[in-house]
Amino acid sequence: MLDTTEKDTDYIVPALARGLAVLGLFNAQVRSLGIQDIATQLGVSTSAIYRILVTLTSTGYLNKRNGQYELGARVINDGFSYLASRDIVDVAMPYLNELRDRTSLSCHLSIREHTDCLYLYRAFAAQRLSVNIPIGTRIACHCTAMGRMLLTGLEADALAALYQHARLDDYPAPAPRTLPELQALIAEDRQRGWVLHRSDYATAIAAAVHDHTGQVSAAINLSGPDAVMDCPRTQEGFRALLLDCSARISQALGLHR
Image (cartoon, rainbow, N blue to C red; front, side, top):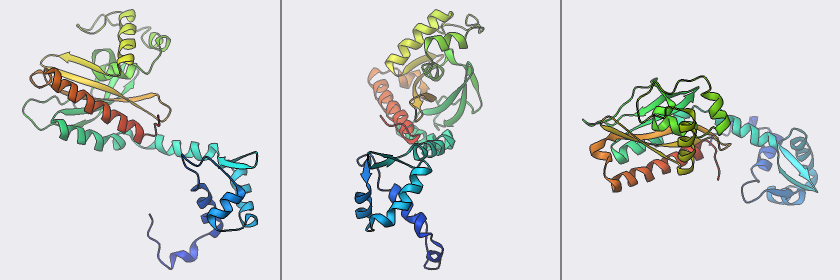
C-alpha cells in the first residue's frame, strides 16, 4: 500500500479511484455483478456509477452481458503481461534458496534455448560434496534431467522438428542416440512429471516450471552426490520437496489449476 499523506489526497482523482474500486469488486468468487449490486457495494447511486461502467466497458476492462458486468480481457491481458515481464530468476530465486536450505543440496534453474539447457541461477550448497554448475553453462537438453523436463513442453512433431538436423549419436550413454529413443523418453518423462538422471558420482532430480498458460517455461533441479541421493526414502523426500517448489514457482508466475 502506498503511503498517502493528507496533502496527497488533494491530488486524488475521484472518478479514477471509483473505477478502480469497481474492478476491485470482482474476484474468483464474484465473477459478475449488476449495476445495482455495484452501486450498493460502493455506497453510491446507480446514476453516479453508470458513466464509470460505460467507460470501463468501452476500454475493455469490463464486459457487459445480459445486464451483468464481468472483468474484460484488458484486465486479464494486462495482468498476464506484467507477470510475464517479471524476470523468472527474480520469481524463482527465493523458492530455490528455501529448497536448498531445506535439503542442503544445490538447486539450479534453467531455460531451453534451441536444443540447449541454459543455466540461469544456482542456489549454492556450501558443503564439501556438492554439485554446482556455473550460471551461463549450456548443456545439451537430452543429456540432463532439467533439459529433458524442458523438452516435455514440446509435442512429438515439434520435438522432431527441433532435432531434425541435430546429431544425437555424439553423446555418451545414457543419453538417447536416436530421435525415436528421445521421443519415447520424453513421453515417459512428461507422464511421470519428473526426471532422475545419474552422472559420474552425482544424481539430479528435475521438475518443470509452467507459465500462466500452462506451458513449460523453465526447469529446476536438486542435485547432489550419489552418497546422499542413493537412499530411496531420502530420494522420495527430495522429489516431493522439488515438485512442491516447482508448483509454487509456477503459481507465482500466474499458473492456476
